[in-house]
Image (tube, rainbow, N blue to C red):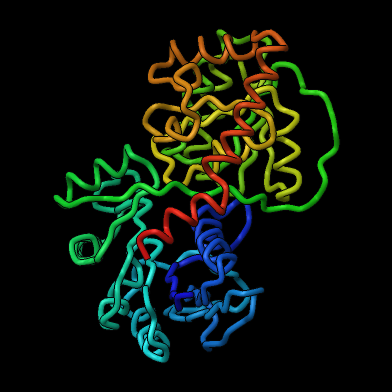
Length: 368
């Protein structure tokens, strides 16, 4: 048994928060194997306190410069990172950890002062991602410096996909271990047995420019029988307005239904009833957009750039051009019933074998 600290800006085990969900899965997996796990995460509370969540002790470390008690903050602002690390360090020094796992680079400044092994899981880097919101120049340079120091000095670097891992390795000129995210259902609710809704596509995620939803809207005129359901927790209003205008211009607005927030159970119902899930994103670092529908028996078509093709491992469901996107959607919807049943079973088996908590945790345990 090892005593392990996990540092992450988010620890929210629900279907809408991929970073928090990833942290939860790592902590759950290691604790299930008998390790003593402490999670240090961010909240907008000023005080420091701890909760016991099964076998995992969770420390909520404040640090917001202007906390608002009426608004639940789930993402650590970049400008708060130095203060957060100052509050984090004395808590880390209370125990002698065998290993510190960073889920992201946010806690690097505190972790490096502890003198223990550091494994940095890097889902993305600001330095390599042009799609993150613009920052003040000075703050941007500070963030890039912290990122660079973390990836150069951590004892081990981990990425979730080979595609991003190769990009990261070339950037920092060192080896990067590939460990995918595991799949844990975020709801224990029993789903109703229901037939697939013919020709229904679904998209689950944020509505913003990096999700590239215009790609599916542009191919809808070639798919007149298709209905698209979009479920989103949040949206960029400017980008959403452009999507709405494009849909109306192409005369496909009547084929699209936008849904606001859905519960985890309802998202799973949406996946299960849809004939096909789609991921049009430029980049998806966590894998859940593919694993969730696959585990529920729904095939998913993903963009080549997203990196999710590694989770699917079927080129028939990966597109790189709008023309092939439309063709692959049409082919999937036209699959004979017996072939579709075989595919969905293979997808479920793949999730259970390659992305189970036990298997993914074993990969991480091997390098602790």
